[in-house]
Image (cartoon, rainbow, N blue to C red; front, side):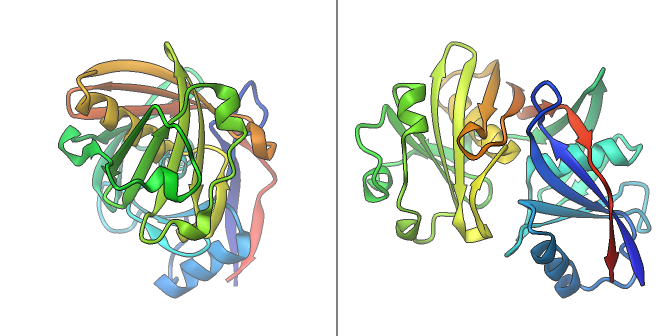
Length: 257
């Protein structure tokens, strides 16, 4: 049978770039293995499958080419632009959706107790020297955040992804005021480098809150180094981190599933 797949670019910058996403809303008869295979065949950073048949709140299941994710920002922002709902249920629970003009926002739970200084030497292990700071955040997957001094430092890195071990994802960033330049590497999920990573933005907010910056807002630019300039708006306060961005629609696909 043929199954429709919307193709979006999420967290675009002035209509360009962004992170590609497949969105499948007809999930009838699809097994877990079939969803994983579709995500692999599409080859996007993530593909999200939305099940609207099991209650008032649609269930969003998020797959990379290699694994299912409990939470990821760009699939939820993209899904929110497709379905007319104010909530989605994913692997970390229910998240709320808001729209402000052309920006779609997802409100994700945030717990500063899930963040702490990383004293394992991971940055050095993967070839990142002289970091400003090193943190670890439970997302609930193991995210490491390494802060460098300048944007040029961030652009010039080539981390040894073969040395990640059990670490799921690495965020490398530089901050100047309310502007952040970020890169994210996630080989465990079959993604060498991600163009725009909402979960990494939430991890950054969690790290900053744990360090005493209990509320704030940032503009995060990502993806230049791989030809997909992207922009994430991040706000956080209390136990909530909000990620927002714009979404563009590309030519849809018909899947033979």
